[in-house]
Length: 326
Image (spheres, rainbow, N blue to C red):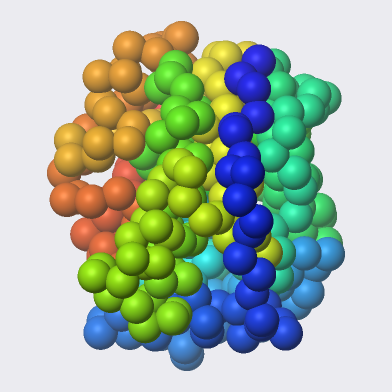
């Protein structure tokens, strides 16, 4: 197993925020919607779960699934790293483009779970305690909402949680799309992701202080290794470590899929994190898992309507193929 990242010997810099909301404000987290809007009229309701809130968006009319002749089943969207601030836009835009109810889990405080590896029943390789906890959250919320089966989209780190939930409960998901997925390319990124996490948190603190790049203290904060490190009050660095340790490759080949189920990986030609060739070469069973190249221009769905539209079209194509095959 990969060893835990080396911690700086210097004393962490404490935050003075009294609440998660104040912490986000201090860190300069931007929660303003895209100019395209986040369609608040699609918002159905919000209910709480153990670690945050469940957001549900539904268009005025739900389209008919040609494979069943019934209203389309819900879509579960699982966001990637730092995706919570973009989640309302992503859910609303999927609801608009795919014309069905879309559900997502937003973590409102400190991210639950630790970065240490743990065994999870039904999952072939150890995953982080954080990913295991959040995979269970998905299953728990679906049960509370009375959803027996859904389609699902997981982006980046969200793919780890989605695959883990699917591996444990194969009957819960029908068509699964993994967009630029972590844990599916056969590589480990521990040093890179830990450095990136330290850099991001330190830069956020520098912006909060209003320091510029000529400030010696600011320059020291920018050092990925050896600089003064902040505490990890919201779990952002643990989230990066979870991605770095994920190896979910075998699970897609082991999930018992029925004739009505499918798995598709979307690999973007512009994505430097999870490259097309690495994802393609690491598919264990090409007959069960399809790979489609995209050209979205950046990583993830956030504020990228083209990415949402093309993914919605893919899901509707899967329904049409199923209808023809009946």
